[in-house]
Image (tube, rainbow, N blue to C red; front, side, top):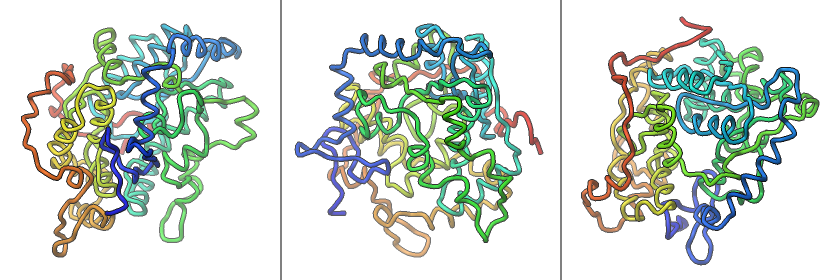
Length: 416
C-alpha cells in the first residue's frame, strides 16, 4: 500500500486503471485538466467545432450529415440536442442493444427519437451469441460489460462505413474527463487503439477465441473493428463534443429533463440519478466487479466529478462514497437467469478477481474491504448526508414504476 498516492483535491489515486499522474503539489492529472474548463474560451471552442463539422453537411447521398451513437441513458439527449439545435446537422442515430434494458431505458430511447425527430438504427446481435461471449468475458477477466462496450463502440463505426457517412459525433472522452489523459486542446479523436487499450481492457474480439471455449469466428464478427482500408475509404473520424463544450453532466441532464422530459431513477449504489438508467446491470453487478478489482466503484467517479465542479467538498465526497459503495446488489438473479448460471457461482467469480491490494482474506470466503475510501479516511466521520444533499439535488423524474415488472426488455432479433 505504500505506493498508493492520493490526489489532494479529489478521491483518485495514482493506481487508477485508466492511468493517472500526481504532480509535485499532490494534484492529479484529471483535476489539472479539469481546470481548463474554467479558463478556456468555450465560445471560440464552439466556433471551432462548427468549422470542423461544416464540410460534412450533406456530402453524401443518404442525406445524413453524421452518425450519433445513443442509448436510453447517459448523455445521449444532450449530444443529439447539440448536434441538431446548435450544429444544425441531421444525424442518423445508432444504438447497440445490450439486452439488459430497463423499462425506463426503452422509454427514454423511444422518447429521444420522437422528440428530436431522428431516424435510428438498432443493432441486435443474436442473443445466444451475446450470452456465449458474456460468459467467456466474465470467466476470463471478470466483466459482463465487455460485449456491451465492444458493440457500442464498433457498431457506429461500421454504420459510418456502410452508409458512407464519415463523421461520428461522440459525447465526452472518458480519459479526458476522469484522468486528464489528454488536454481539451489536443482535440483527441476516437481511435482503434484507445478502444482496445482502455474501453476493452486490452482485448480485441479475436482474443476471445480459445481452445477452452466454443466461440467461433462467426460469433465475434459483430464485435470486430473495421479494417483500416475500409475506414480510410470513407474517411471515418470520430470527434468528442467534450473537447469543444464545457462538459458538465449534471447541468446538461437537468436541461434535458426540462426541455425533453428525460426520465431518471434512483440507485442503491450512487447518488447520481441521471446516468445508466437504461441498464439493470451497470450500477449493480458491473459496479461490484469494479469495486472488487480496483478498490473503488462508480460512486467515486461521481463524487470526483462533483468535487471538481465545486458542488461538494472532498470530505463530503468521501462520505458519499462510504455511504453508497458497499450497498447490496439487487439484480443478481436476473443476470444469472439470463446467462443460465447458478447464483452460487457469483461469489466464486467475485473471489477469484478480488484484488488483494484492497481485500484481505480473513478466512476462506470471508474478506475485509480496505479500499481507497477506507485508506483515505483515517478517522471515520459519520456526517449527516442530508446536510448537503439539497446542494447536490439530483432529480428523480420518472412516470414509470421501476420494479413493476423486473425483467430485461429484449427487443429485436434473438428473443428466446
